[in-house]
Image (cartoon, rainbow, N blue to C red; front, side, top):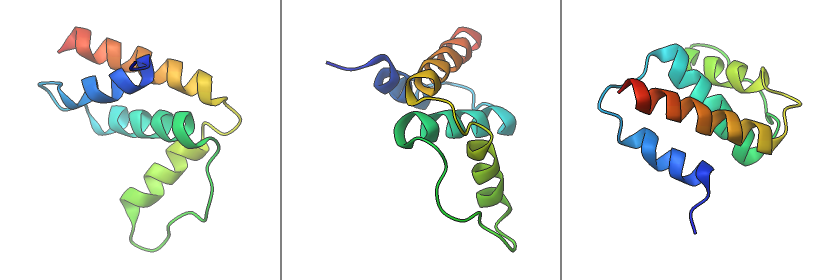
Length: 84
């Protein structure tokens, strides 16, 4: 049986319009927090601007439970589907 979090991961792949960068970062961060928990490892440096932005977005969710992050991810995907 597919969980709402897993279904939302599938649904986000089928959106007809690609979300903006801010929304993509939020989706990434919520997904990582929901699946792996708090951020780990070192922040990418140098010219890895995308990696740094992803790390920062994920780090901003530190302390949020995996269940909370999964629920927010599902809600965000539902909102994007409604706008699609």
